[in-house]
Length: 182
Length: 182
DNA sequence: CATCCAACATGATAGCGATCATGTCATTCG
DNA sequence: CGAATGACATGATCGCTATCATGTTGGATG
Image (cartoon, rainbow over all chains, first blue to last red; front, side):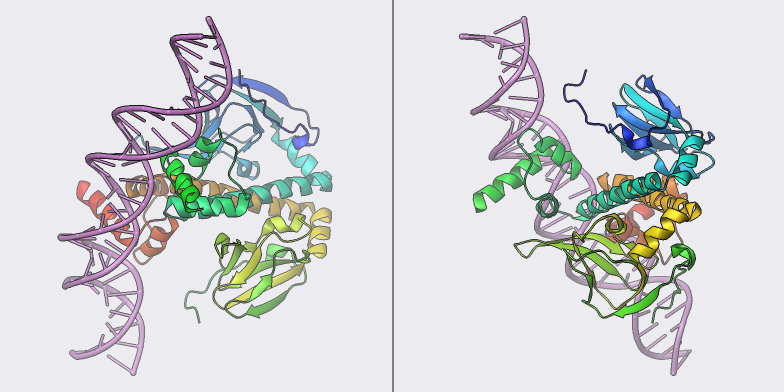
């Protein structure tokens, strides 16, 4: 059981019929090449979108956390371009792709909400990108602060470190240095 | 004059009336706090979305290149959350926000195309993010190849290096090493 | 053909952060 | 209340990449 209850909005799919399904660690939501018939959203746990390569190597394309939709772009594709696998036990909400598209085309409000959601996601990703393009911990922390305003409460620094792609130790040191400066 | 003609699709705005405007280096498309009345797309040059901070520091939120829409998320906001400034001379296509939204709500095809575009952008950004989260040049190049398949033609390696957040020299070395291995 | 320029290529050095180690502190739990 | 746990904190070492330097190559140009 996860102590922190995640706040996952319920009306994301505009009241469309949906079912929930539980996946064991290592379970597949879909495989590369499968025809796209459903749209998935993570309710609990984590789903990774991965692409395997010949040499056994693989890359992660998305880490979908609670509330995230898995592979939004697949909505407009005939088949999947990668695999979706659960690293840990996960609960996933599933809606029909056809039902979704029909609703999208007949309910402008819903279409607008969906587009706004995507646009916000793009925005967040772009910021994340720019932060990760910076070289030093100092620059990355500074950039993060420029957008978010203040340091999060203690207890969330580890997550912040992971988010800006830095080891917790490096982040502690940087915070310590800035404290010393002021 | 830029030698490489950029292929910028014309129907992105679904045939809506638009005007083109030229901005000098350092010119502002809009400022933080301005009411959102237009939607911008870069035709030539580069537009940066930036956020200034008290200490004179600033972060770049987006580098819009030819073909890119500037601040898609602003469509659904009342006012801008950051500044848009041209680093070099730029030509920008401008459409009315109201006209765009009206068209979006009355033409499902257009809405779907727009959503698909956003979804693809999210997909690309996520990949970019995962690549930048990797630590070594080797891993980053490997991840890039896993998605794109092959190395680009010579002459584009510098851009690849910039894209994966690595110095050109480091990329040359890594490519050289892989050549040696095979 | 001589010149020029950008990209490719590689060596040497130095800086920065990952990692490991060690310790403190606050909170939780038996 | 003592033990256990996870986050905060900081020191030491090492590896990787940025940077600077120095060539080399190939295509464009007059």
